Image (cartoon, rainbow, N blue to C red; front, top):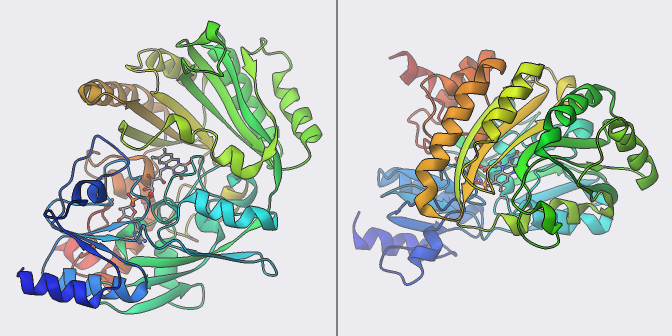
Length: 464
Ligand SMILES: Cc1cc2nc3c(=O)[nH]c(=O)nc-3n(C[C@H](O)[C@H](O)[C@H](O)COP(=O)(O)OP(=O)(O)OC[C@H]3O[C@@H](n4cnc5c(N)ncnc54)[C@H](O)[C@@H]3O)c2cc1C
């Protein structure tokens, strides 16, 4: 790649091209996960679809490895690459709410907080994840789970349309009526099929919620997890409530007596009147030991979405393992408790996010996401600020996963995986949908230009 070629790219883009000699190169290449340190050859900061088309054509014609960056939150840093081109969409932040149709057009650089900010004044929200700094693009293309999932489905179940730049540089709109196979694959198949420049989502009435965390000391974890497991199928879908094994943060406003103690937590949001939310959660609390603290209360939905942001600033070390979980027998609960107790840091955690309710009402072959029979999406995350702990975080996550995986389904959520999964794990995740995904990939990206992701090999290549 010549300097002349780079200069031509810069001239053609409205956004900036950043390379290793630029003063802000290190800031521009930094990812959310401090464990990942990738050094791209070029970062193309796109500002619109035209920039993205130019960047895709450039990457392909220059035979560069191409990575696509939305929010940059991905665990293994699949929003970047070494020695290639990063198509960086983080500056594309437009959000337009149409209150009449309750739809929201979201550009691909938005975080979920950006969208919540725009929709809340209209009394609306789109189902996204539980930390507001997460990128909408990667989260959506992998599936998307959060507090509104039980009632309104995965983020992809609320996706109406996506604008996409394909590997050959063409711009298309995918929806159920246009490029329907592409639209099917985008809903769960990750960044395999092209660069999405904007999404059109269905939003829902969400304003004030009854939400927050309830913590018990770890000695009560078995009772809490069993009660939660039995309660979930009886809980109204308006209640998105997950269970976690964690440590009480040693900071205000947490009660000093509990600082640094291992804990079991229920964290959730009820979309409806606070009194009704309290009543429903009260049913679960009956018969359980008194919690260390119960901070559920009425708050605006975006406040709940951002509640944990402060604990997870950019640059921490993260090691991720995920699985889909159908049922939670007592033995699995005991295994969780035993493994979680060995956590190597205060921030390390296990969460089980419910994906029952509306998720199950969609057929397994209606979108690329096939785990429609699961009850939870499990994540084990080893987290710490100290880079010297990286090996300990990895060792803990791997040993924990090995112990708990026999109780779980074969596949896991692609957005909760690193890039060190066993061969066949991505196939197992997509199950019967994998063959169709490989065929769509062959149609839209036959040379696998977009391979910095949980990769789906094009069918033609796969059979060679
Ligand atoms: C603190 C934290 C909390 C999280 N909580 C949740 C949660 O509650 N629910 C949940 O579902 N997930 C959650 N996640 C996981 C999250 O979904 C993934 O990390 C996801 O990859 C983030 O998307 P991104 O755009 O920020 O990532 P990036 O790193 O920018 O990209 C991730 C992947 O998506 C692809 N991609 C990104 N943008 C595009 C695009 N425009 N077009 C095509 N491909 C693209 C990239 O190629 C890459 O493979 C969380 C992650 C973190 C770090």
